[in-house]
Length: 250
Image (cartoon, rainbow, N blue to C red):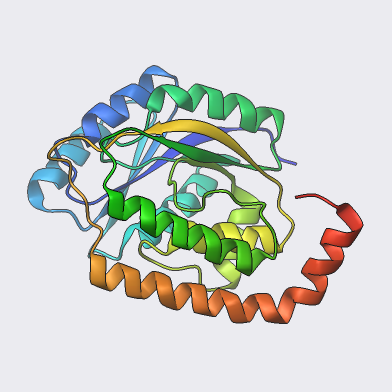
């Protein structure tokens, strides 16, 4: 296995007001950053150019907006090309408790084969609709993995070991928008990649920028669940055998 080397991957789409603060907090923790400009407007693009001039910062620029999943995938590939073995996925909107990044990094270093996932802890600021949607997705993920191993598949604060993550991305369709976070965890679980969850606060700042499009993204997520369901049916003998032989999550 390659020497452990961690960076942060930050997909950015018109987060001019928040991305510099996110970058600064991660840089203060000693984390190199791979910023992915997903076709942002000129003001955000200029902010990213300024950040890219800072030490230990690499900018990937997409000509057009392709979605969060597409941006993360480009960022993970860039991270591997830069020699990193692991990447901490971080949203650019300031929702994540970035002080937890050090805890996630420590957990990842202790278990380099595992995906270290955020188990979101919400405050009173969370929209009720988000909670209901997450509960529905949680049930579908349990069905599609034939297990209760994944308590949350939607939190975008997680550390990937790059080799298994990119094997999944290169081999199959994992979603290019808001469906990505869910699909890649299910497919990594199918492959037996270990996972661990750490609690982390999720913040919904007043006036925050959200690019979740209710109709479009809910349709994408529904189609993804259906595709994963049929994938689960094809894999169900192997998944059930693994449950019987291991008796626990990988």
